[in-house]
Length: 306
Image (cartoon, rainbow, N blue to C red):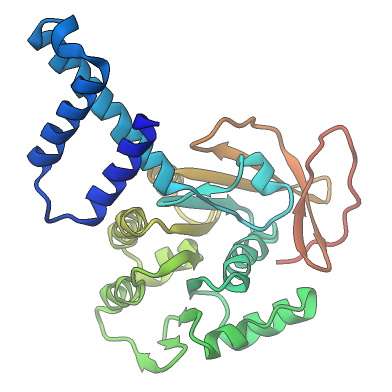
């Protein structure tokens, strides 16, 4: 019980950042020492080291208590991820064109929107009108309604202009820097889910690999601070392979899709939780994307959309 009490008190300490760190460590040293009666059992130097070790363990445990996971809402994927993506992480969804990447990404957003979360999307392939119509026809999702009530901030970036939920402006000569500043500015602390679809088009439009990579690094730091999750989609084979590998290295999770024997499959290539490297079937139903759960049980493949 004392350990749990310390964990929760440590969480309160993090909420009140004005309190001095030395005061808290001294306070817990006294509490732990009295509880275990270390002062009479061990030499002073030895029990101080033990107390420091216990405090460090409690701090780590308290971090786990407040972090948690974000469910993807995709049947079968949350099971593979042992509950979902850990909060404060970045995800790379990479594969050839036509392997359901936007469906997976937007279903991740839609799951949060249904729960009242605030979400952000940067699209480089379709504007809001087309995307909303696509998912309304396929799954009955109404993305435009979430834009109207302020839950979804949708930004469409084309080579000519940037069209957002509220305005449209023509890009300047330094358009790449403009869009990156705009994205960072729009992602406020209450945004929990972010989708960048796709990085491949950003690499082509901006034509500056370092600038796009800087966006990934800045978003990685932003989601870590805000306990959010950001998904980046990449069309494999369009950009340099070295760039693809660098993005894989930066992101905490890597989900890979492929077309195999006229079917779409997915696997978890990199994860913060234990996982296998087996390919699993991806298929679409009336309520969205599903992923095969039991490798021994065949699934009925419905359609191949992108």
